[in-house]
Length: 81
Image (cartoon, rainbow, N blue to C red):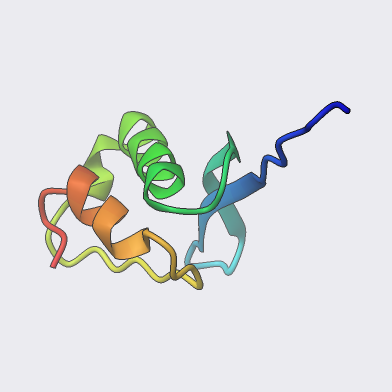
């Protein structure tokens, strides 16, 4: 009998709207594994690599994710509170 491991795939994206209400996509990450701390760290590191100015005081970041979001955010961004 063969056994198989089930692996989850998580998709993460960080986006915003500009003053004209146009949609801006900063980063997108496809993470093979379960949603958790590692997946959020991967998204945050991709965001920081793309836009080093993202980690500054008074930047607001909202998420609908629970699993690992806060811990992953604080690992990457210095100004996270």
